Length: 120
Image (cartoon, rainbow, N blue to C red):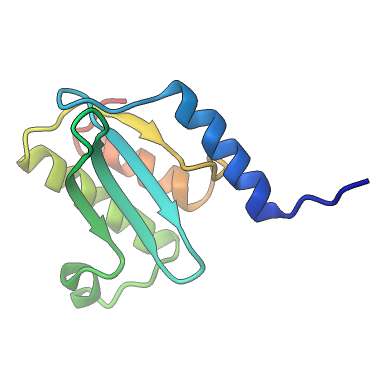
């Protein structure tokens, strides 16, 4: 019996999701990725292979608030991501949770982005 670690399970979930969703210029992919120390959000046009906008816990605006990449920080990042997307003219997105389960910080980012003007 083979033991599959959690990183491999997440990678498999991510590949399963990516088979089904893809971002376009009109409706980019809103990709959320979480590591042990940081949170990253990107708006990606997969047809052109370009990142249209991005925000992370490494940004100067995030660090200026002295926020941490926890639940409160995830809420702040969701708001910042939505504001940057709306500034670039993005209103509808396809949500890509990158294989992470939809709870905790991922859910906080998604809910806050919806509240701040994104549709997905």
